[in-house]
Image 1 (cartoon, rainbow, N blue to C red):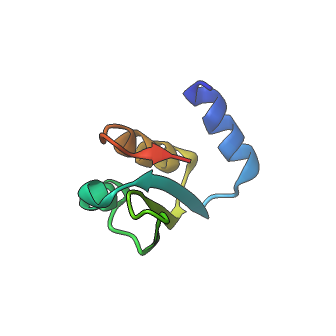
Image 2 (image 1 turned 120 degrees about the vertical axis):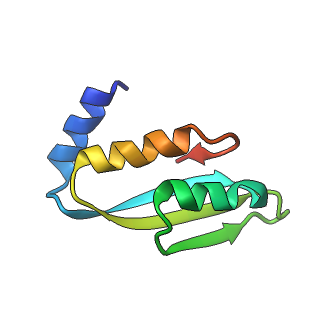
Length: 84
């Protein structure tokens, strides 16, 4: 999906400012980078059964769809992080 479509969908679904729920899969070695990329917001971590991966959930108050896309862009530059 292109960014213009995603921006339009976000603007149709949310009234800004709004709390946006970000979910990512990573591991212990990239935890700090992920937290910095999202902006050191409070979050929840849940390790996988094997402990190899960690599910990260961030509930972030965003002021616009552009802010959501910026966070995804920053996280997208990180190696080993999967956005859900």
